Length: 171
Image (cartoon, rainbow, N blue to C red; front, side, top):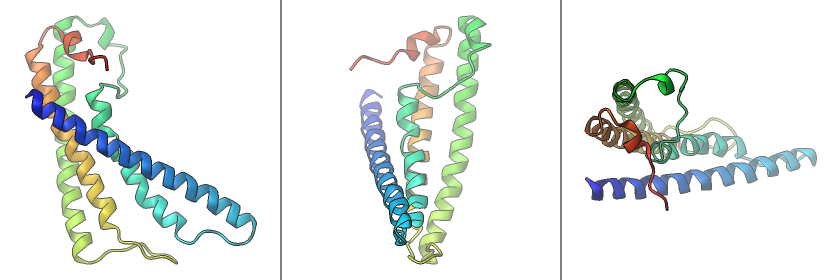
């Protein structure tokens, strides 16, 4: 289980790096497009590339944030609950998220395969294929499902003592 967790963390870190690169590309394209528009020469394809990189930016960081337990949660009730109730809440949250992200991965996979089969591309001045963005959604959501399964196992294993699992080892 430990080796699987490390491999998953490495993959999630790569996804975060790719999302960061996508963010940098979007940022530079956005700035270049604004400056170009001021001089009457906007960058061609800036919108299309930025749309595609948004998927990578968002879904690239999901699994890594989950590994670090850094997703937002409403702790109004959670902090007042006892250890067993917290464990129950964690198990319900992990189970619900597994269902949601599994469905998202499944439907994302169907859309990615369909997009690839019809050579779907953006509509605009520059035609870019859409299947890479669709597959990045599948990759990010799939990593999230795997991490949630590991978290659910940990939540069940640490039932009644959720703080033991919440602690992230120092780097």
